[in-house]
Length: 427
Image (cartoon, rainbow, N blue to C red; front, side):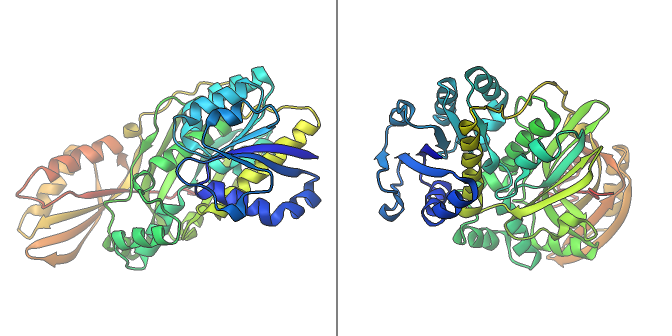
């Protein structure tokens, strides 16, 4: 079977798709019976290398050339961002053209809308490459867990942040670890979206909509890793833990708690050992119990491989003249305010080396219903002490309110204190 595709975007993932199609065309055809023909390629600022352009493929910089081409069966959207990607995907689906996308921004914002448009036009929409790179999480949820009701999903969904934290656990400063991630192709030139947690929050929104069959409006809560130091990773190790950027969604009392935050994980946790650019997703459901899916989460080829798998899935449906909606949105589960959730905490203060400081900090915490579990004095530099504290379970709002008061007291601390959750996810 021959399927015609149009590729929008020749950045990292788009170039990866062209590389795989060039080197693996025969493998794909032998395994699936599908011959993927690249009919048009749209590029913006980055023209694809000539050796990657398949014979007969037309290059263009006009989006309309792909939307108006009635011979294109599947539009592969890889330009990223909200606009014009959203308008292009909406138009393609509305015209009955199937779409493959790895664009987490438009899916996090418009997945229910795309589902409705696709259902009305009979088009297919697949988005395996949008979440967790090479891990076939979407295919697993939509095929292997169809009879399961999920109670939670959590994991590591950003390869850049995970690579940086892995290097920091070896003693490398944040800035050096980030520069190395960029050099090795695991981080963008502007990595702010990754290290702030916002990238993982968009992926979590897509994952949560899929497994809980609910719409999500607005951005999920996200905290990043920019204030974490290599010292924090060393202090965490002294506590039998490491630090990971966690994306977590779970049901409690008919409401959905969802957000992204860096957390201390005990070394007994499976996620504590997911290192470098790898991602992992831990699913918990009623029938299947616990399942952990693990694989590459960054880099052009892992994501490109997921994109091509989506193309083949849709091609086989087109052959059988069937369409499959991307996800059924049949619930509207209310979100829990993330500040109302509870956790244990790790706090690192830079306190003045004076008598009575600890008692005053403890008083502020006690006034906000935060109970101290342990205290350790670390390095002292020029009269300023690194003080590490852990707490018993407390409400997130109370924890942050108390630290805000402590940080505003110039006779107590110097600089901003770091607050991290301690999360035994599998406990």
